Length: 607
Image 1 (tube, rainbow, N blue to C red):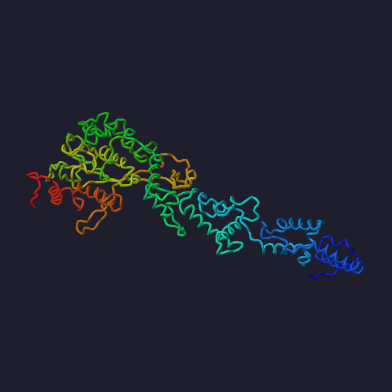
Image 2: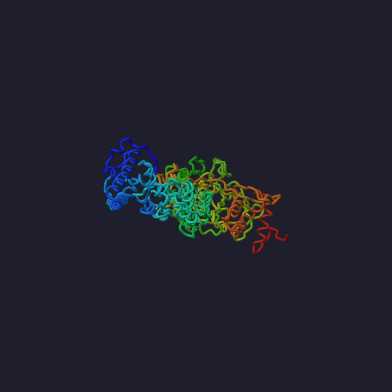
């Protein structure tokens, strides 16, 4: 029992004060002592039996908080919110119905003589017994597979949304309790510190939603093929991600066949997000029949003489058809405000080069029809452009029918090609017709005037490498492209991986011009070729054989296909020029190794 100062007015108090609430520490103890004096008085006047009855009546207004209250199942331990109501109800059931009985009771039980301290004492009794409960339905109620992003802010929002409206604690307390309930072997009644609970919840989110791509910001992507997508995701794997890259890919795609999923996703992006154009968008004459004929080295573009750019040589006035086509080719190449070769995927409307067995194409030209461009031997005013040569960059060894061309019998010719990867969604694969347009129609025909096939016994001017005559080497171009996309999680498809256009400002799915989605440029191809002295691989640009070798080393071109390409490019293993004994020896050896019958007076196959 607490010690208090005795009030001078104690003797004046009457028996009714036993039911009044103490309004101060001094008054409450005074009331209590008055009640004891009253008991003594009754005992003296009425005897022991009546005193016991009064004691019994007084005892019913006392509460044993250790026994009478089931604090374990309380929602909380706030006195005013959680405890006072049940206490008043219990006292009313016992006949203690005065509105201040509960106050007197807790003061007497706590022996603290102060209402505020008495409340705190009861709250401590509650907190010592009560096991806090979560206000959500556990971890599953957070719906982590659809959380959008495993960030602290997003996870706190998910926890808050899962909590019931009448919850008595805050989000941080809920997260601590969720941790506690999911770690029974490491039990702490209130859960761990908030930072521990937050770190645990992030890891749980990683396990169920993924560590990399989210639905709120996504990942920028500049190429869309299986290898590029996997590389971007691998780079974004955080160090604390609890699973492997393979598990992450399966999680964000929703399938163990994640390579096929990514392939199909990128195929759809190339078909439906990137702009597409046809050859008839370049010039209305470029239908399928026209383009087939053109690749044979036929048609007015190959057979006429004159300048596509309009600076006519009086001896060779250009036709309206050639002039108009030249203008259209240049406009398509330079287009920025309309679809062109630099912002769209050019699709073939003729038998394209998809059937090329060795993922490569080569064009070889035998005539220069245009003067004034500082390429080839056609010269303005010389009257010599009916049968002039392009600049010489290779040597013809023999035709596909094994007709040999020893000792530079073909005169000057020019070959230029390109190759692509085995993944059809690789930019160099998707954009191979863009490269064909650049190589065959703009860079060599429009800009330099190179036309016609190199000999009458060669079937194609431009064709699959395996269908072209055997030459010592070929120049080479490749495409460089940016496919401006973002990887996101599609909420409409169970949060699986998807791609959307990137508006380049940080937003997802924002308004972006179709002309900005794809950026295409052309450059001399990169490659590797053996050094002539050491045999070590060295950088060699603008060389088709070297480029094919690099694709092979990047696992984009098989060994068998590389060897087939080398059969057409006889000088693949050495660094050689266009003429001279070394070039002649390369052609002789290839011819002698492959020709079924050796033609007389050509290559000496006896050595």
